[in-house]
Length: 120
Image (cartoon, rainbow, N blue to C red; front, side):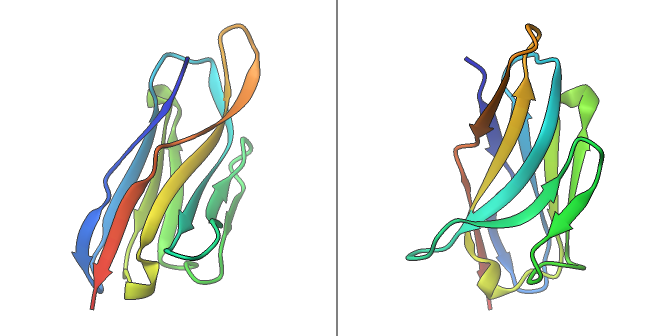
């Protein structure tokens, strides 16, 4: 069973940067659409950034100009570069990806989540 493994979260001061990574745990054929979500305590999970298989990106208004979603197809890895971080960016960040297996079956997967804490 393939999994999405996240890394890169942590504690950073306001104005700092972090880069989150999300990698498929096993070899796969390809990654279709993917996205990063965040969930703050007591709030619903929200889409932060999305990237289609055609490389079209979409960002939440709150992160436009500060966050960048990207992919490395050779590594089957998705990234979220977060710059100019603000305390309100504090949340657990989850990646979600539609993975295509070598048998050409397609399924959606979620990462385990990684905590991002921005101090003021």
